[in-house]
Structures are given as structure tokens and as C-alpha cells.
Length: 620
Image 1 (tube, rainbow, N blue to C red):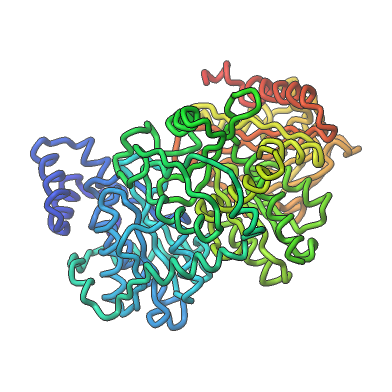
Image 2: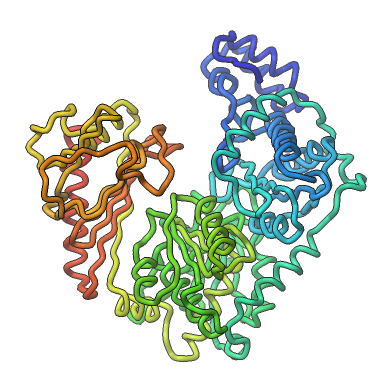
């Protein structure tokens, strides 16, 4: 769609009504025009939904700013044109398309297929419900040019999404998103709304059974001891959170020779309205309550869950005192990493050729494990587009074996069969570990304690401040970065890094909560330095090629990381989708002294609020 910034809102509505062929969304815009509801029309029509590295995600309703048949068609027209232009032999290699159970997902998927067919593509299609990892798996398995999954994961029920995978089977990363976005703009007039005829098109191949069989076969490399799995007395409750996961969980558990799950019956069947949960994310407080209640009634000590599109995994375990331990995303990451390392060692993989990664806002415990055990480790920016692509590069360029990757938001990638988070394989690997521990008279919680004893204790706090005023958010970060109004006289001991090329002086705090700052990384202005507290000069000139971060820099958002000499690590960033100033805090105590770690954590939590954000002064 051409620039709509200065067009009358009623002209935009007229354009929409001329282009849209869906009676439901046409009726919505028509009614708003009749009611002269300019505010709502502005919200729906003025700014097109943005295509980013996560693809598209928005509420389902009429308008260029939302997800609907028209915006799905134009996105698919643009994507297919970009893929055809950028990837050799793309049409013959084909595209993989799948969808979950959300409202409109089936229609959106079929419209996507239609657009790719019109450009001459072979289409590998999952016509029934699929779980998200099936699409990247098939892209890699079939050598397809790209993949599209229609899903909004664990978003609210009125949302949907359009997730794109590149030819290597991983999510797209910059600058591909910009190229795709430009192609969507160039193909913004919807052409073909006939999705029903794809059923008889010879260029569409149903891969539901063949790719599920191939996926199950590929995950067999993750089986550690089939005899232990087969003979375990382990019992557990499972919920797919009203999503698509149950039949796929059944298949992989059978292939691993693990016992069947006890289902939360009310949450077993796919239901796009998610009627028993306020928010369909197993990470949310209270989301596992029904599963825990059923487990209590049946005297079962373990609960496991997938999110609705089954790319995430969560677990909770009843402890010796009868209380439930809901594992955090980082705790599960530690448990998986230790189990994967054991399995790879048992299979004869050299430890120094094992690669693991996590996001920079996830726990540093994985880094501590790598330092002690000797496997290759790296951290990445947030999101599996970075984690998976980095691990794939380590495999290709360094000859590494992909072991494990994760992010603290309960996303886990075990092995290399899927270059994205995969809640189904994670489910099987976790239950396999639980079965082995059960045979030894242990709980999973005991296994986690063993890791703390070996690598040190890590305690975290991930919170946020609500700040709906972008100008105020900018001022808060400016004060952290440059001092009060760019001055050095705000009674805080600060660095004095002079950057002539940028015409600024970076004045970060030298202490946080009284603890010396040892490391700074600022991905907004492009600065990274270690051993900050060891500097002997009061002021330092920083050239344009000095202290350049290894991570990509983006001036469009704020992201600063500090490490303190006592084992603290703080990452502060703005949210791209919500009016939030988020922080991720972790403290490590190498001696496994939990009291000291907890005390240090609380000191830094207070310092973030009082010293860095000045929450009270800023009304946050």
C-alpha cells in the first residue's frame, strides 16, 4: 500500500472497501464509516501491520493494521516474490506451510498457499493442525526455500501471527525482514482470494504423515536408555493448554518408550477460546493450577505442559514437603543442558565439539557449566532467530555438534533436528530424565540441586516498570548513560569515556547497590567494555573502532547490560510491543551460599529502582 500518512481516513476506508472481499471485515469497516468513528478507523487503517523478524503478529479484525484475509494475502504475495528473487531455484524447492488451531488459522494458511502457487511454487502443506516446530523441521528436511507457520503461540485468543523460516530452517533475521517488508509494500494489492481450489492443485503436497514420521525418527537420537524408559514407574500429568500438542506428545512419548500421560481432560482438545485459562501461557502464574490439582487428587508428583502451538515447555514437581516447585525457564535450561551433556558424552561426542547457547537475558549458569566442562558456549540477542542461527553457524564453521539452546521464556532447542524451540522434543527429553531419576529414587529437583553444588548458585529476578511515556523512558536511559542532563555532578561516581566521533561522553555509574561495575555493554550507542573497575585513569578517550560490541547495535531501542564484581548481571531494555521498561537480574554465588546470593539480589533490585530508574521520582 502506498504511503497513507496524509490520506483522509475516509479515503483509506474507501480503498479498503474496494480491495477487501471478506464480508465480515468489510462489514466492520462499513459500520465504522456509517458511525463516523474516526478514532477506530485510524487505529485499524492508518498504519500497515509491520513485518519484522518475528513475521507478523496482531489482533484479528479489519484494517491494514491488523491480521485478516487481505493482509495475509499481501504478506504472502510479497514474501513469495522476495523468496523467488533471493533464493536460487526457489519455486522448485518449494515452501512449507502449516497452521495451528486459532480462529482463522486454517483460512490464513490456505490463502498463503494460494499466493505461493500463483507465483509458481511447489507447496508442502500441513492441511490439518500442526505444531510450530513441524514447519522448520520440514524446511530443513525437504530442502525447501522457506516456511510459513500461522500461529500466535500463547498470545490472547483474538491474536494471530505469520511466522517465517528461511531456507536453513531457522527464523529470519535482519536484514531479511527489511527486504521482505519492502516486497510486501510492492505487492500490496490483493489478487487472489480463492483458497478452496488449492485442494485439487497438483503443486500442493500433503506432508502431514511423512514429515511427522520423519520428525519422530530424527528425534530418536535423543533417546538415552530405552530400557529405563520402558521400565519406569513414573507418573505425570500433562496439559497442552487447549492447544495442538497432545497427539504429537503421544507419538514422541511412544517412540521414546515412555509411559502415557494423565491428561487434564478440560484442556486436552484444541480450543481457540482457551476457556479455562486467563492467558494461555504455561509460564504465567496460575496457568498450571488445574494440572497441579489433578496431580494432587491422583497422588502424582510431576506436571508437564506445552503452550498452545507446542514450541514451549514447562514443568512443576512436588517436593518432599508436599509443596510444588514450578521450575523457572532458567532452571529448566540448566536441567536440560546437564542432561544433554551427559547424553552426548555417553554417545562418544567430544565435549569440546559440543555447542550450546542461550539468550543474553538468560542465566549465566550455562556459561559457568561451559567453563568447567569445556564445551563451546555463546550467548546471543533475545530470540531463537539468533540462538538457532548462531548454533547452526558453529556447526557449519567450527564442526561443532549442536547440543542445546534456550531462552528464559521456556523455549528449548535440544539437538539439531529443529532449528527453533521445540516443546515436543523437550517434553520427551525431560520425561526421559525424570524416568532415570525415578529409577534412582531421585526427583528432578534433586538433579537441579546437584548442578548448583557443581557450578554455583544462581538466583534471578525478572521484572518490569510500566512507563507509557516514551519521552520519560528516554530520559531514564539517558541519565543512566550520560548522567543527569549529561552532567557529571549528579552525586554518582561515573565513568568518563569521551567519544569525539559521537560528540558525547559516556558516564555510566561505577557502582550499583554499592557493588563495583565490572562490565558494561550498551547496544543502543554501541559500547562494550570489560574490567571497568580495574581502570586506573579517571578519563578515557574512546575511538570509533574501540569498545565495539560483538552484538548488533540498534538505536531504535534501549538495551544496557551491567555486570558487578559480586557476580551480579543486569540487563535493562525497552519492550518493542508494550509500554514496559524491563530488567533481567541474576546473581551468582560460586560457593552455593544462597543466603548471600539472595541478599545481594535484593540489594541490586532496590538499586535498580532507586539509583538507575529512580522509580519514585519518575512515578513508576
